[in-house]
Length: 399
Image 1 (cartoon, one colour):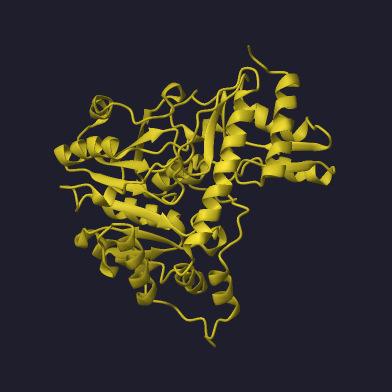
Image 2 (image 1 turned 30 degrees about the horizontal axis):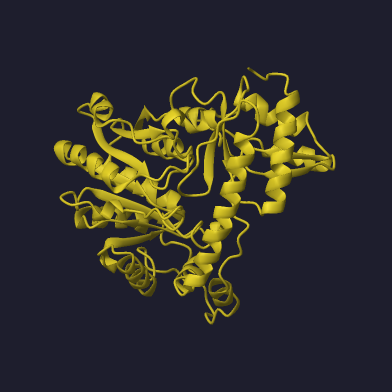
């Protein structure tokens, strides 16, 4: 049998999806599983997008432009302009989800062996994207004790080497729900300018900012206009995860010419997904107001329920729809599996994501899990009841 590549051996399994077989087995036993493990909103996709798919007039689903449909790119540029971000269609490349935007950016901006610094915990697939492109991730640890705020710039500087080429920031953050302030980002921009680094800004959760807080885009940082590379996606904004449409955005035209070659190599982004995404730009403001109110209600209930459980600490997330929670457990991977294969409460259980998969530093996240509050309140209440009961009887409980 032919031997597989070394890369295939070290490619990490998704901490979000690797427990799926255990969840499927629980369901076959008749146990209801509440999915708090994945950012799949139950919010309905806007009718504008669904109607566009139902009423497709094309008789042939053709290749689109490698950069994406011009009409969609122009519409997307208008969306950003309304958000106070001054860009045009030439600054946008449509991608197959935000994931492809990240791999294109890493491939175009970094050579194999070069480094990016990322505050951890971070979106687990950054590790996979880096591995695919030969990029080395250098983590800088944020702490749950201060709600995962940006680490001091002095700590970033300690990690900079001749191989450092960029910093990745996710705002609002997945998995922590932390919302970086304008002041934090301006501080970060100083080090970008000082060392002439790329700032890779993952802003897919831009609309999900709470408690009157406002999102500040890295594209509006002054003096580093050619250094910023933004990643975006329709997955969460419009509850269209399966459309697989994202975008890479930069004012750096040399970079945009380079990533277009990557786009040409994969031919084009999804044609039908672009039709739905362009239509979604017509989504009324009332849709987002309803989504905002729904997530606020879910967040407030969940944070209160978690912090009322003995030994549990849950920061209040200011954005996205996730939080990283500290639990009185010995091992989050064992705990997450135990919930699915050895525990049930009233014929129900919960599925969480072990936080170990969101850290690059070995040993961190052992007593933390990521929870996505993407379920309706009734289901979230049942899920919190299950979790509270589970923590009472888990064999590896700690004090």
